[in-house]
Amino acid sequence: MLRTTRYTLLFISWVVVITILSLFSFPSIDLDPGSFTIPYADKITHFIFYLVFGFVGCMSLRERTMGNLGLIKTIRIVLVLAILYGILMEVLQYTLTTDRMAELGDVLANTLGAFAGIGLIRWIFSKKNPLKWKF
Image (tube, rainbow, N blue to C red; front, side, top):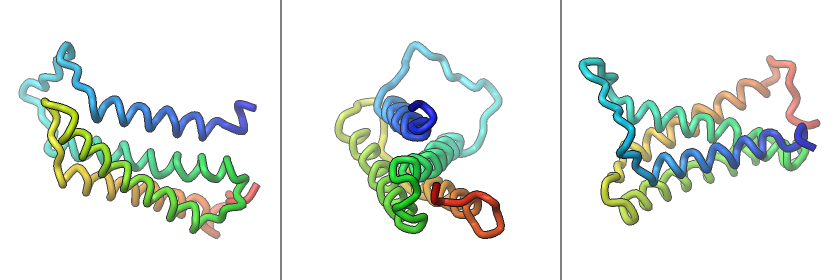
């Protein structure tokens, strides 16, 4: 059973992680980088979070439908879901939190990350690779 639900469990876990990290602050954790700073580290983090969201979301939907939904339809569903979820997180940051800010740049980074995750799925299941979408 675990083998047939591993991507679904991973996807649900990943969404929970994104939600927690997007809406909660951790004031007891000191994240002072000192003199070492990475430009746009926040945007890179958003990009990676939603790249994984897009990739694992597609694999989860493939797993749930046994590949019968089709690659293109799955990609469209997950892409819309990722973009809407990213926007929802930013709206919730703006309305529910006092120390988090909603930024249009974060929505853009989320969207680009989702497209990258989808692109990775398309590449993995392309005709040049041996993996097949259907089980």
